[in-house]
Image 1: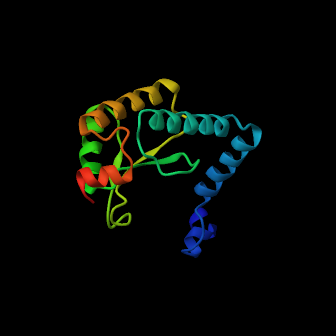
Image 2: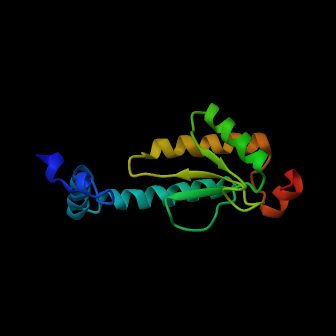
Length: 148
């Protein structure tokens, strides 16, 4: 019956019923409380403050996507590799994904993160940042030290 009457089987540009159902459930959940959003905002603020306090250069904003600016593609990849060895999964982005000279590590927070997760991540960034000698350096200093 579904195969003959459901719109996804008649038109290729419609949304599948399961996706609509999931979206309605999400709207129901977020309409009842702001608890998840509030926690995500707290996590984002705590993460940004922690990374800034240890001396990392962050792209400004209040989004839960927090780019750690490194300006050098090799440095971004090396740091991502070393953070992975510390149990922190991050992705290094560099040209052509971002403009030349704007290499970064992309971090992303969620409401599922607990303070202990964030503290572990901050500690790992501090350890790896010290290893690479970038803590407390701004854009100009990083470019002088590592190039673009």
